[in-house]
Image 1 (tube, rainbow, N blue to C red):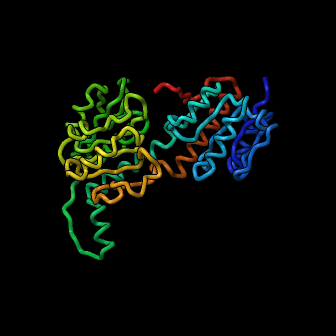
Image 2: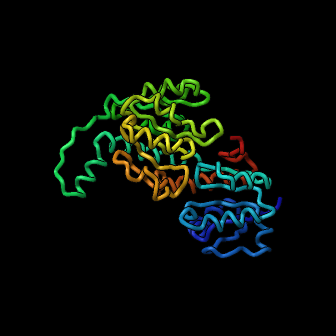
Image 3: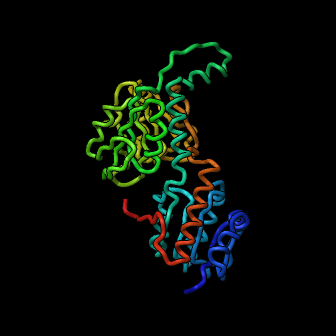
Length: 321
């Protein structure tokens, strides 16, 4: 068996190289130092790559460029859950097995969802504006106790949302393609989508992007929601028809929204979402915590051990949308 030649960042190797060597003492490494190009000889040697969390802040293009040019790359591990970008299709077309860190950021993202729900229930956007204006403006708030939350996408993130919401007295119903029976709350199949929308006081989308989910939150979906309901999206931006969302918020059909993902990122400065008074925007950062980064790295190290022992890899993804 040929030696594993791992492509990773200098920061990852400096922090975790000893753990990798302990698993496979024969491992060789090609490091991305800054944005430097990898030489042709090293390109030919690379057969394994880890896209670590530190790449997200500016070096992703350089890293993916190397991986797409490495003719012998056979396994690519991402430190993030989503692999619906076209670059992953290109990797798979090159014969690369792509694995993700699905679930690593689920607790962190779920906490962001609870932040949105608490902020919307307590009218935090209005209070923040009043504070900025030095204006004493008491408001009447809503308790989460008794709130009905529909979770579209009952995977790892959706399950964490239901678990964290329960102590607040929130009743959750989840939705997924196939109900397994081990979900932490009542869960319906996708054919009851509009029924779920009509039931919920708040709808949380944690759904992945597939052909079935693309644009699922459209004008009809928002019209089916209860008047004044809240909408939260921490899944994928393209599951939402953004003009329809803006219209629902502007008309008052929706009472507010907490949004972490968008069809175009960064969110264009001329987007109406920036200025709507009942919208909370975060820059695709709901899972951006040190704990989530640690969990993603731990998952790769566990997967590397599986790879070294010739065992099946965890979280293998596909190009089926």
